[in-house]
Length: 296
Image (tube, rainbow, N blue to C red; front, side):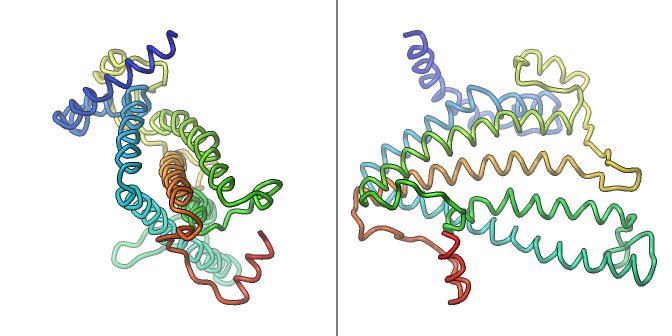
């Protein structure tokens, strides 16, 4: 009973919190003020933020159940966002290949110990820095193209039940999977990743156990302290970017889970003829399509 009361109280308070945040943006978006930064850090991984998102989704869901065109609009918007980010991030794969080829040429043929990129004022780092930086391209593809791959149906899945049941049951399985697996997993990764990221960006260190008052007290000693330590003296020193990518990954998976839940619900209500409606899938050649079909 206490848990139900706690949830109900936070849902009611969420309306006031959303209204206050919208009407007082300077309290958490004015990053020239250390206290505003600390409020942003606190609320980004807080219970208040969770219930604010929860309430917004409840409202969207209620409107979407009443008017399917609104829910389809949300689905198209979220899937379009995932597709756009993923298609841009996929170019990191080409950069990774080109950069690796250049590194090999510079090491084996020109026997250089450093490498410069750019014109006018080029960026110059040791070869080992550029070699370790290749990990960042891989992380960009994994974190930012994951939602895109889900929209495209490109994730490998082990099917024991799904193909053997009828259309209606498949859509119910998809809805349950979104609610039980995708959304909770994304929330947990966000909650852990949020403070993990900020501990490598600012000082004093922040923690999920810190109250808002404690955060504001820490603001007196606030300073930016972006992590620039590499694994080797001349190695890549931008590992804080990996922490940022973890948070972006969690956020995009959460949004894709919402889109998938809405799509599954709409396809359940509207019938088999609506399956794949508004789905923006990339076209593959005959050989690529055959390989993909064999994988699945």
